[in-house]
Every structure is written in structure tokens, then in C-alpha cells.
Image 1 (tube, rainbow, N blue to C red):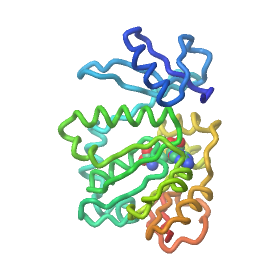
Image 2 (image 1 turned 120 degrees about the vertical axis):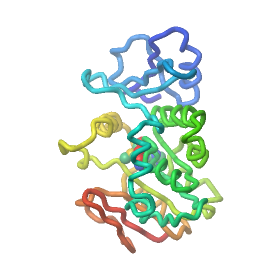
Image 3 (image 1 turned 90 degrees about the vertical axis):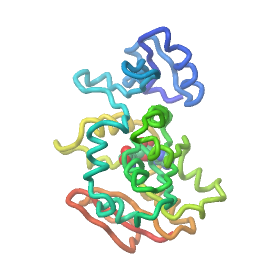
Length: 259
Ligand SMILES: C[S@@+](CC[C@H](N)C(=O)[O-])C[C@H]1O[C@@H](n2cnc3c(N)ncnc32)[C@H](O)[C@@H]1O
């Protein structure tokens, strides 16, 4: 069990959902909010049937909890006007507009990059090591699948809760992917004032969890016979290993490697 977080449900009618998530993702359930620094909060949805999960940092009462919604006006705007195939992420991955490019996302997180790639027609398998984040992402995918405007994009996404290094060691069908994508949590990048509050919260939550570092993730990926591996980094970060190419924007660098 991860002991810096527990599931909290404000309403007794949510107990069966709490039990299901606790079993699947090995998370504690608490009735006493203050025993844990972070809470995975379950709430009924107000407008449609179903529930929503969010991550709450109890040390920052003024900060809104983080949840995932793939159907917000911001996401719709990003999908429509984010640059399409010309944006750095798409260029680095090598998206051409032909549907079906198989991408393995080793660091799913809030699923934002994966959703952009899926909206451009990629089939993305997202791997997430952290149980609470995997639960939040799974919940967002379930809700998204019921929303007509994004259901097709959601159908391009698959989630597996696993350490991606372990996945790469165990799976025999890695060659079915054309690209491996890695976006590791980078401690320094979220210290600036410009940092989005939800990413800062994610960073605080993950700070005390054990996760493989950038080099380990990259090494695992480069050990596969995959033509293209893309590592997302802050633009000022030190280069790791020997990239064969790079797509750079104002704040982000996508380093490209061969497997
Ligand atoms: C910076 S976030 C990724 C953000 C994501 N690209 C997005 O667009 O929302 C990094 C995520 O990778 C996950 N992670 C780190 N190491 C991992 C591993 N070995 N296997 C699977 N997930 C991992 C972390 O738990 C965290 O959720």
C-alpha cells in the first residue's frame, strides 16, 4: 500500500466504488481525512450518472484538487487549435495524419499528451506506475467513452497500471509499437512561478514515491528494437544519452533516439 494517500468518500452511497478501487489499485480507504497528506476523493457527478475521482493535497487547502476531464473547453481548444500535426509533440512522434500509428506512452500521468496523440489518430497504450493516478485516468477514460464528441478519440487509448520498465521486460509484442514516448517527472521544471498548479500538485504527490529515473526509463526503451523513442524534457535540461534528433519549442525539448 502507498501510505501517503488513501481513498476518501464523502457519501456512504460511494462505499462500493471505494472498495472496488481499493482492491484494484491497492489503496487504503480512510474515514479520517487527516491521517494522510493526500486523498483520492470520490464524488458523484452532478450532470451525468457516474462518479469522478480527484487528487487532493491536504497541505494546500486553497489549491483545487486535480482530476482529469478530456471534454473541457480548454481541451477542445487545444485539440482544435494546438497546431495539429505541426505541434512539437506530433512532429517528434512522427505523426503523419495516417491513422493507427501505435505509440507506447511509458509515463501516462494525466494522459494529456496521450489524448493529443489519440486525437491525431494514434493508437496509444498508456502505462502508469502510480495506483492513484491510474485510477483517476481510468475514471476519466470511462467518462470520456460516454461523451459522443470525444468517444472516438478515447477509443484510441488503452491504460495499463504497471511499471513500464517491467512491461518492456515482460511483454513480447513490443515490436508492434512504432514509437515509445517518455515524459518523466522532472523535479526542477515545476519550481518556476509559471508552473501550472495541477502539475505542481502532481509533483508534490509523486515526490515521495519510488519511481525509476530518466536514465532508467530511457535505457529500458532503448533496449527494445523500436525505431523511434521520444523523450520529453524541459528545454534547458541536460541531454541524456545520444539522441539522433530533436524537436524544440520555447519551453520543451523532444529528444529522439533509436532503439
Ligand atoms: C510528467 S508525468 C507525465 C505527464 C503526461 N505526459 C501527461 O501529458 O499528462 C509522469 C508520469 O509518469 C509516471 N511514471 C514514472 N515512472 C513510471 C514508470 N516506470 N512506469 C509507468 N509510469 C511511470 C508517473 O507516475 C507520472 O504520473
